[in-house]
Length: 430
Image (cartoon, rainbow, N blue to C red; front, side, top):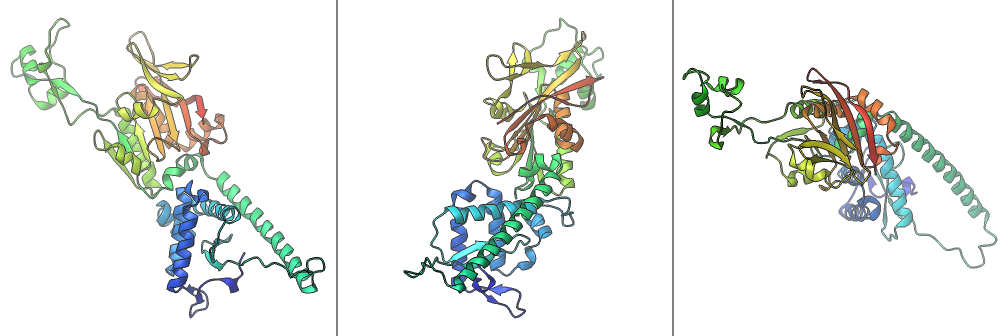
C-alpha cells in the first residue's frame, strides 16, 4: 500500500486537501475506468456507483461530499437526517468496495502508474503511485543487508497491522449487517438503486349495465338513471332475462382491485417514510422498458399480465385448472394451492406468492406480490411491508436468501371478508 509520500496531487494551502493537475486527473480517471469495467466490478452496479462517486468527488475537491450521511443521501436516497447508526448501508457497501479493490489489484495485470485505494475508516479515496518491484542485485539475495532486514521487519509489522485492521473491518461490517432489520435486508437492492421504485398495479377492463338496460328492466322508467345509482345498485333483472353485449358499457375510469390498491398504498407509504422515491403506475401507464430502467414491485396475479409472464418459468407460478385458479409448483409431483370456500361460496382461506428476483428478465431488482384473490394479495402486501411479519416468516427460509432469488407461498385466513395474518407455508431459494 502506498504511503502518504507516494500520493498523487499536491497539498492545498491548508495542508489537508490535495489538488490534481490535468495529467494526474486523466491518469486517475483512466484507472477508474479500467477498474469499473473489470470482471471484479462489473457484477455489482452498486459498487461501481460507489467507487465512481467517491473518486470523482475527490478529484473535484468536494471532500465535504465524502461523509457517510451525505453518501447515504446522494447514492441511496436516504432522508437528510437519517440515523447512520441504525442504517449501515454506506459502511457495508464501502467494505464491499474495499474487498473488490483488493481482489482487482491481486488478480488483474496492471501497468497503470496509479493505484486507487480506499482505506478502512474513511470514504476519501487515495491515489497512489504504483511501486514497481525491484530485483535484488546479483549475489545479495542470500546475505541481505541490515537495512534490508529492517525493511522486512517493518513490512512484516505492517502486514500484521493491516491484517488486524481487515479483521476489525470485517467484524464491523458483519455486525452492521446482522443488525439490519429483515425489512431493510429484503428491500436493500431497491433502496440502493439511484432510480425510483415503480409500484405497478393492473387495471383490467370493467363493464357496467347500460342506461337502456336499466330503463328496459326498471319498474319505474325514471328510476336508477343517475350515474351514482347505476354504479351502486343492480338493475331489476330476473335469472331468465336475456342480455346482449350492447347492454354493457365499458368504464375506463374504474377496475382496480381493492387488495392491489391496499398493497400499493402500504408500500408507497413505507418507501416514503424511509426517504426512497417511488412512483405508482396503474394499468397501461408502464411498459417493459420502464421495468428495465428501475427496480419495481408488480402487484396482482391474474389481472396483471406482467405477473403471469415473469412467473411463467419460475418454481411457483399461477395457473388455471378448469375454472379454478391456483398456485402450482413445477414438476410432476409439484404441490397445488387453491382458495378454500365455504358452502355459500365465501372465501375462508386464500394463497399468495411473494417473488423476489435479484436477477429478473428486466435486468433490475423485481418483487412480485400476488394472490389468487384480492384477500391474499392484501395479506402478501402486509407481509412485505411489515418488519414483524418478515422477521417471523423468513426464519424458516434458507439463511442465504438475501443474496439469491426467493419465492414464498403465503396462506391467508379470511374472516367476514377481511384477510388475517399471512403465514409462510412453502419457500424456494435459488
